[in-house]
Amino acid sequence: MAIEKPAVFFLIGPTASGKTNLAVELVNTFPFEIISVDSAQIYQDMDIGVAKPSQDILDKVPHHLINIMKPNEAYSVAQFTQDALKLIDEILLRGQIPLLVGGTMMYFNGLEKGINQMPMTDEQLRKDIEIEASQVGWPKLYEKLKSVDKETAEKLNPNDAQRISRALEVFYSSGKSLSSYHQSKNKDVFPFSVCKLGLMPSNRKILHQRIEFRVHEMIEAGLFEEVRSLLQKYPTLQSHMPSMRSVGYRQTLEYLNGSIEEKECIDKIIFATRQLAKRQMTWMRSMENLNLFDCSNDFISKEVIAFVKARL
Image (cartoon, rainbow, N blue to C red):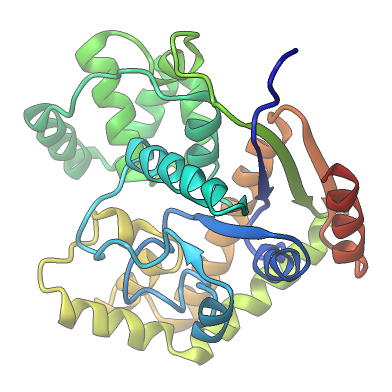
């Protein structure tokens, strides 16, 4: 008789879909323990612009993998996978069920499908790519990536310097696309049974309204002041670093250095956040065995709780 794999739950959704509030309700109803799957919430002192759960929520419902890195440090999919697998084991040993919550699709993908042994970072090659980007701009390099690895390019923002650079670096050093490594069968099998809960709006207009409301809330809460404080606290912080490429931060940096006016900055943050949500939903549509729930439905928490209860 086959031994059943231990169960873990994924709660996946685009930005502003209500993941945090729903996750807290699930923790208060079931023996769940949250692991954050968010490439921006990992950073200390970045709270407003990444929509980090409030300190009150974090005190009552602890989230793993939040506030684990400084903004001038980098964190990879491979590191996330290693950290998440360790935490899953620890949570299961405590008799709890891991609930992985977030919207960083590359993290979910890397964890579930495994990561192949891709070429190591080549500093000289990376510098060459950065020099080319400074001459022609990241959108041009994005087009170049599109010609050699269309599948990866379609999942990225044309200004996502970190990921465009890495994808080109992998191709230049190995002659193989990043997507081909991700598709390879030669990976570690995820040793757990997964139940995926996906939050997707039936009406995208509602999600767009939520995003606009959230951005204005962030400005009122002090996003500009938060970024000024980061620049003072971390003198080595640069605009090209992963933390500062996060939506909201790179636009605020443009505003603070005088490149754009405040209204344009806010408009650009709203537009970039909508584009992020669009990319997240594109990822979700390609996911296997994703149980979808309408995040614009007022009764979503009751529906998800009933579904989880049936699965458990």
